[in-house]
Image (cartoon, rainbow, N blue to C red; front, top):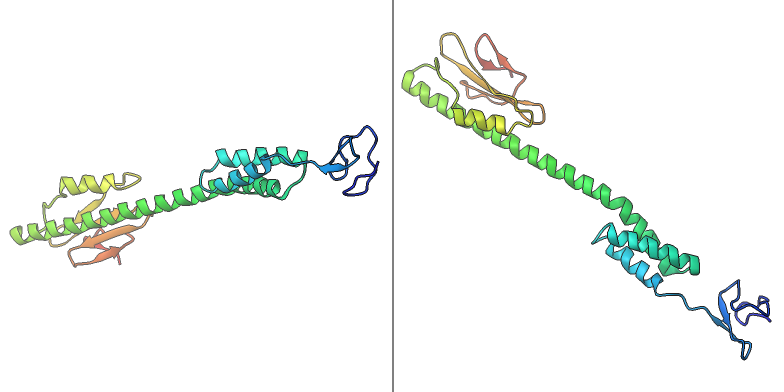
Length: 204
């Protein structure tokens, strides 16, 4: 008996054409196409949902797609299987990128807070100078000092240097990106490599 769809020979005892999957009607010798299961549509739907609800739906798309492909290759099954694999691979990458971005934003926010604290400390130092006419014996505000440390990832302490005659000072703190921010009595406020020990000024 020949298959009415593809023309291939079907054994008399055969129920389906091994070439195209048509089902043989024993009563009238007509062969009918084997209907694919609904898993092919489910695989495609799960693959699409994998972009919005990752991992679980992506795994289901891969499972449904693989089962359907074993029964009979189908475009929906292939698309679902492919989408499932893609989402399984790219979602972790996107997640890692988002985490890195959030970490960078958090670090910048902490650095901005450290700079603001140092600027406030300079205001305090100038107020002290107005009252005493010297910077000698000026000390860090405990609140600002502790806040700078709290915003430092590595808990690096800020430094305050006052020259021997009390006429100048410099304050420096290490930011979370490794750079150092420095202010001094000359109104300097910028990145610096350190404090000049001889005159208590920021190295420019």
